[in-house]
Image 1 (cartoon, rainbow, N blue to C red):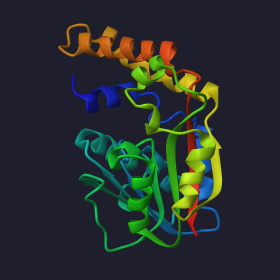
Image 2 (tube, one colour):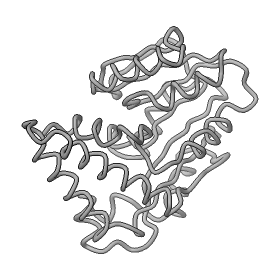
Image 3 (cartoon, rainbow, N blue to C red):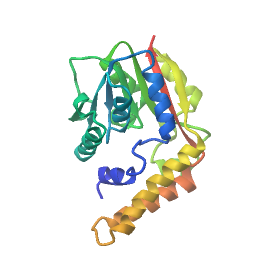
Length: 248
């Protein structure tokens, strides 16, 4: 079963592809756009555009650009923008985020839960810097180790121990690259549980509701496997931090 399709189905009831509640997303966007009546935002790996359409709906003088490789997700993003009346203020590009270029700099660059597209947090920040206007801000979300991971946690996430660090080390690495955290938010255990139950439950429900679909069995298997990897692997071990950054 196509991984992009799995992700779209699993995020149907939790369109923010990260362990963040709607309230947390709203607070992060408020802080990221504070003091600016108008601006231009870029989401590198926007998926269904959930961050951007919410930002535009609350900020009538902002414009936005979203970039993603999933054409179907971009279609959903456009539909959401139309439903909220912001479609004229958003541009959506079906292109690899690593290859996107723009002649216009951005006041806010987002990449929350999509740093894998660039090969990790620091390469993502290097890419964001190329798009950022002077005085601009970056909102980036990344995983970190809440505690030393077990082999089950590593296997469940499909990563190596050195792919992530603890929160202090992660923050030190960001600062060493010339970024200053002006705000930050660590997702709560409740947000993690809500996200994972939504991901696995929505995918499993789709499989149950479409028993004759050729992807029903693979979807159920993906949901069951993910639930196992989470509950018996990385739950309580893997954390998620969202930084708001400015350049030194």
